[in-house]
Structure formats: structure tokens, C-alpha cells
View (cartoon, rainbow, N blue to C red):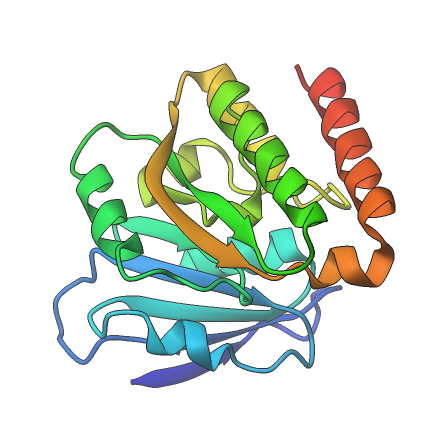
Length: 217
């Protein structure tokens, strides 16, 4: 069943939510939230790889933080899985995530691979060190958290112009909520690096991460 819910026109940045709900009437265990930019097409490949008993919410418009928060408020699943539209899930991704959710409450994240040039192998190494050694995964690592814990964290910071995922993870650390790897890898696009340049994009990410870490420690 698909419902389209439009946010009130009085909102400065209106968000349109497309809810793809499972046919079964029981409450879904997991809600997949996929933020989309205005005009971005539906991620058919990602949607086709999701189980039919998952609730899926496409959140279009607004800022990334506001669209994900609006979707989370409408979600009915016990867990919220925030997945970027260009993510490709390997066959073991969902099984690995479901196994983790049976254990400790935490923010769970996936390891990351990029398509693209050999320079992206360096980026993958940096992602591995940042997330595994420093406990700072980013949103493109398909973060998953319980609905209750997400509410306790206050959701994504809508005042941040970027790095709302980093701020959520930082707050989790401050509140003692573990940030743990799923133990599986997802593939994502390197088009931002190709479009803006590898060195420039890497430097921008590093500068933002360090500045937010110092400001919100």
C-alpha cells in the first residue's frame, strides 16, 4: 500500500513523504527511511532489494535532516534504518542487520565500499579508520537505530547545514549509546567525488568532521 503525505504548506521547507507499507496488518519490525532531493527519481534498485514486510518511507524535499525527522515521526517500525538512495545492498546485508538488532541497543552502521577510481580505495580506508577506530560513521553507512533511542537522541539536528549524521553519532557517544558495526558492507556511489574532485571533497569532509567534533565535544 502506498500513501503520499504532504507536509503543511506553511512549512518553510515542506517535505513530501511516500509511505510504502507492507500488506500485512501487523506492525513492521523495521522502517526504511530513504531521503531524496527534490526531483530525484525513486531508487528502484534499492527498493527491489528490500523485503516486502519492511515499511519504506521516501522523504522528498526539505533539508536532509528535516526530511528524515518527518519520516521518522511517521514510521511505525520498532527500528529506523536510514539508507541513502544510491546505496546498493549485498545479499547478506539485511540478514546481518537483523542479527545485530537482537543484541544490544545501539546505533548500527555498515562498512562502506565506493564505485569509481582507485583513489576511492583510500577513501574506503579512511572510512574504515574513522568508523571502526574513532566510532564516527556517516549517514552513507546506512545507520540503523531503534525508534525509542532515536527519540531519546532528539533526532537529527535541523539547525546544521551539513553533518547532521555526525552530530547524531556524537550525541549517542555523549549519552552512552553504543555505536557498533553490523559486520557487512554496502556499496555507494562516488559521483560526488567525481563531480567535485577527490581532494576537494575529502578535505571538505575532514574539515567539517573536525570542526563539528571540536564544537560539540
